[in-house]
Image (cartoon, rainbow, N blue to C red; front, side):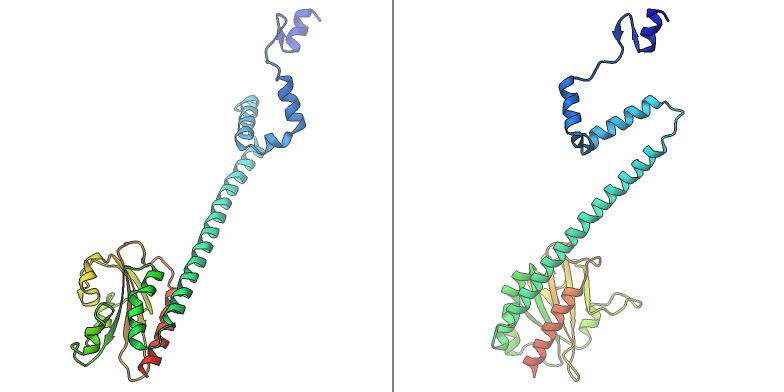
Amino acid sequence: MSAFDKDRATGREGGTDERAPIAEDLRKLILREPDVILDDQDVMRALVDARDKAQGANVVDLRGIAMERLETRLVRLEDTHRSVIAAAYENLAGTNMIQRAVLRMLDPVDFESFLRDLTGEVADILRVDALRLVLETVQSDEMPAVRRLDGVLSVAGAGFIEAYLDGGPHAPERPVTLRASDGTSYDVYGSRAPDIRSEACLRLDFGTGRLPGLLVLGSSDPHQFTPQHGTDLLAFFAGVFERSMRRWLS
């Protein structure tokens, strides 16, 4: 074999190497710490791409395809993991908020303070802009107690709550309704009505022989209460409030 043939066989022509050798210090680093390369997704992707190019277009790399699919699944799994953790933290924060509101609601020793706290610390804890209690009654709304509690208590005639929550002839009756508000519910929110853009409506059952009630939480944020949100915590809060009201009414 001639010297020219030897050069061709070893990838050299005219005594010059066609491929530049890797720097010795970089080579030693890779051999000493190969995990650095394996843990770097961009570097590994570049190496795989270079290998695919070297194989040519006619070679199907099944292992490479499988690795790409596994990588896609890993990314999806990580996204799901983050979403689950975020939802868990959000649920924990919501639980703590409801617990604090319930404890504050149980503090007052008289009925008037109990109701006034709804628009004070309880509303602040729940991060709502308005909190109103609607009671159906056959009496006049000019009662002194109603005037004193203006801003938290509204009275309405029998059937008002059903009409207010009417979602259509086929809508199911829910203990908690989350929905948007158009800012025109003056009968419930009074002068605060134009500011309300979403609301949570909690049905209240005060027992046999008593007309129903409605606890309404209003927010200026149109996204705070939407039908896509869960209602378990609000249903629990409504249950505690309902039982507290039964105690006061008895």
